[in-house]
Amino acid sequence: MLRELGVDDFILLLTGAQWTILLSLVAFVGGGLIGLFTAIARSLGPLPLRWLAAGYIQVVQGTPLLGQLFLFYYGFSIFGFDVSAFIAVSTAMILFSGAFLGDIWRGCIESVPETQWEASEALGLSFTEQLRYVILPQAVQVAIPPTVGFMAQIVKNTSLAALVGFVDLLRMGQLVTAATFEPFAVYMIVALMYFSLCYPLSVWSYHLERKLNVADPN
Amino acid sequence: MSLIQINNAVKKFGSLEVLKGVSLEIDEGEIVVIIGRSGSGKSTLLRCINGLEKVQSGDIWVNGINVNSPKTDLRRLRQQIGIVFQSYNLFPHLTVGQNIMLAPRVVQKASNAENLKLAKDALARVQMEEKIDAYPRQLSGGQQQRVAIARSLAMKPKMMLFDEITSALDPELIGEVLKVLENLAHEGMTMALVTHEMGFARRVANRVIFMHEGKIWETGQPDKLFDSPKTSELASFINSVL
Image 1 (cartoon, helix red, strand yellow):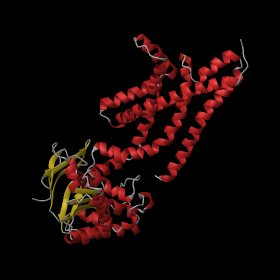
Image 2 (cartoon, helix red, strand yellow; image 1 turned 120 degrees about the vertical axis):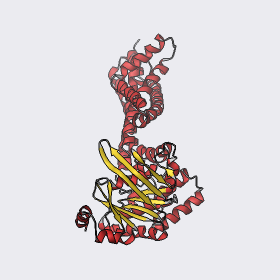
Image 3 (cartoon, chains in turn orange, red; image 1 turned 60 degrees about the vertical axis):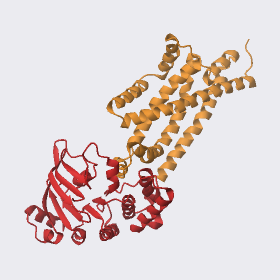
Image 4 (cartoon, helix red, strand yellow; image 1 turned 90 degrees about the vertical axis):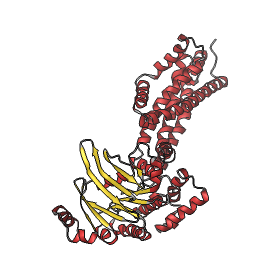
């Protein structure tokens, strides 16, 4: 039942790529929200909250993403929740991105000099006003290049979702390979598709890094 | 009652006692210069006045407000006392104008129009009107420090604290900042300054305080204090800086 590799397969791969993009976006947006809270809690929160945030970051960074994906994929059903593969892998990817972004952004918040806190405190700003008007805007400038760089990591890491059966770009590659038995050609195309998603992000990250460094000589 | 009243203030950083029972009063309109070797507690004393540092014992009153009472609204207190730091501490992501207008807008809820006028007036007082749209990095150290002074003035404080504000400047830039301070003095602003500019202290101060090892060692009118120091510590300090 083997068939020739054709345009239809290319379109199939593109639909797989759509899911890869969607999963990446969900992971980035959800992870970004969690990451922001984690970064603030980790660097500025009361002690118990700091420990909690640190623990979360350690656990996620200290375990393989594939393990986390399995945990959520099977974990949900073990606890009686009947959720789709997309929900399961999204949850795992969000928590994964949240921990890494939280750690990256923690560093960015802490890179704003103590004297900026002092100066704004002396002007009568409250803690949240200091954060909103003085600290975070400066932290964001530092954070943009590594954040865009991490987006490329997210895109590549979503490919692990294929191993729990989520039909993303890589999984679609496996399916097309099974139908055509052209593994080399298929995975070449798959790799090129990943590359064309990640490469612009890397270039953009590099560009932003140079631009923001030039803008701020400090 | 004096504008500032400090009773027996003690400040420790860990086991290091930086202020060992300091008492001081500053009246409205008075200009007090604090001198002393580094580590003598001068900057710490200044920072305790607006609550950036907390004293362990003793108390500090500013315009009838107890700085160290947990009930004190530090936000309100800080609108009455401006402080300018050695390292300017302008907000690098904001223009000069935005630096000045941030606190009046956020803390005092000034309208945009009155805020802009406030900023322009404050900049005029430090001769920096034309730089309102510049970013801090585009300015020299002296200019940045003058903007930092304007930023404090825009809050219309009753008193200004200056913590070694010329120490980080190149020698040729010190003059322009001192001139701004002298103008403020002529306007009648109450000021407490920590400085190593002895000539300035002599010209402008009503009272000079010499701090040594966490205590007020000697105090008096500038001419008397500089010309006839009573203690050997002050005499040797004056010798070392002149």
